Length: 284
Ligand code: ATP
Ligand code: MG
Image (cartoon, rainbow, N blue to C red; front, side, top):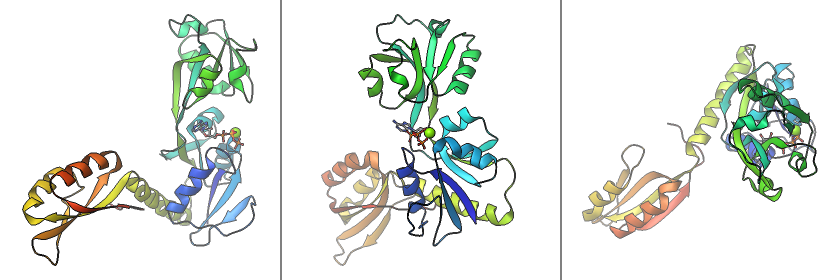
């Protein structure tokens, strides 16, 4: 049995559960308890606050964990990053009052910076030879400059709207972050390693399928070459005969971002009955 530490509620929770579900892992239906086993895969989930996930993995309480890179680097526990997971993307940035005259990171010399990430911030300041006063607060960091508690802030930014509504402007992106899968630094036993390998294989298949669609269409035989010229496909598309021998059916996989341009081009050359289906996993 492999134990996975995950956030019990918050910004990582939904997508963590979605990823595990997409990887075919179903949980035993129990009321929210700390430890929930899967009913079809040899893992159990340990639900924690995200702050506690790096330590739970470093100490061996959990075998692996899913947590933001920002927490991993801030906590400086003995863990290794196994793979990025592509969700909960955000960044840790320095921000200052929007009217301040900013020419470079030296602006922060002698200034007071409010943050919940003192470790990452002090590493960044040291690397840039900046001497600033770090003021640690655990929440609502963005209001600190407005109430005179600090000159600038170092905090998580995603859309930037919180900064704007607090009259702040982002001046340095220090760390791009996303959810990552972490593990301990000691080797797992063979049984746990085999479970982790299977989990990673499934995550790979889920990620591969993300943002891709399976597309089917009917094409008049004489337009087949024109249709094939439009399709990027992974390998060559599948072409199947139809009962009417003047027509065939073409199947392929398209990236979501190219979908609508492709569909319009396909229609223009005579493809009809275009069906777009979701792909759940893809093993290459
Ligand atoms: P907990 O109660 O578990 O301690 P928390 O309040 O510390 O939760 P959340 O706000 O749930 O943390 O954020 C969890 C993680 O999600 C952050 O550490 C970061 O990696 C990521 N994150 C934070 N804000 C955003 C955002 N606006 N958009 C996307 N990801 C974010
Ligand atoms: Mg937290």
